[in-house]
Length: 420
Image (cartoon, rainbow, N blue to C red):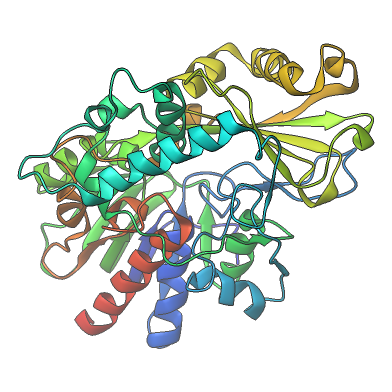
């Protein structure tokens, strides 16, 4: 429920950031404490955060998710029930990379060996019992013939290269029991639709939070001053680490935690197909089995005439900086390996994400640098029982997911409801 003309004022609860955590916190508060006045503040021009659905022309009206797209751990994922609650359709087709899904080359002996090597890598991460943390590259034997594939899949998981990422943190990752499902209308549509009942101000940047006073927290924004009894901050770690929001008194432990839980990067390029019958529906293929700088390609999701190309880590950052044509050229070269040298004639670039350059986000999802996994708890800790924090990076086991973000937002809302 966007508020068009807003110039500040006074409120019970201010929620900063209208992504999955902020929307989840606001809706939970509305349910728990309908007596409270709540305001959702969002710096961008839309609700959804890193969940963003688009409907480009020429693809039959298919909803395309530029951010999160899968209901991971769908049976226990809160957004699965919310989707049904708000009248959206949950598609239960198995994810193409999962058991029962459709993967090209899945019977190839090399592909099976690569999959076994990747599973072994994750098994070592989950079984790690060292007292000291390490980076994930230490779990890869230098002479492993599938080391490049392991590095590629590791980057897809964390958004960062293995030598930057914590073994202990990955060992704690648990999105919940599978399978992975999708929302036909888009994950971004789901978050935005769920946020509709919340009074929201778009295009408002919070630059300063003064929590020194006993009666109110004072928020200085680009559209006026707001006084709130409590505040829930749900912005990304990259925004916090860059001190885009200044706190008084200072919160050095939050800034340090955010800086050591940076956002990795995963970007998508959607490619239009002029002759869809050339490609099987809802099928997954890797661009390369032997190079960590590879894309993963989902062919014709929902049967739409598109290919979803997915890039992560350093490759994603390099291609984002080079632009959509470079992303497209890279994808075509990789798809030639599977579909032949003439495949490019039927393809054209449609739309891409560029999350590193999103000014109010700065990346895709958080990973922990070695030794920083416990800082997720530091990031999530409330201050003086009136300044609260939420977001996927605050989740110990479900970081990087929209339902992890939702759960931390709901938990913050419950704390606020008790505090007031």
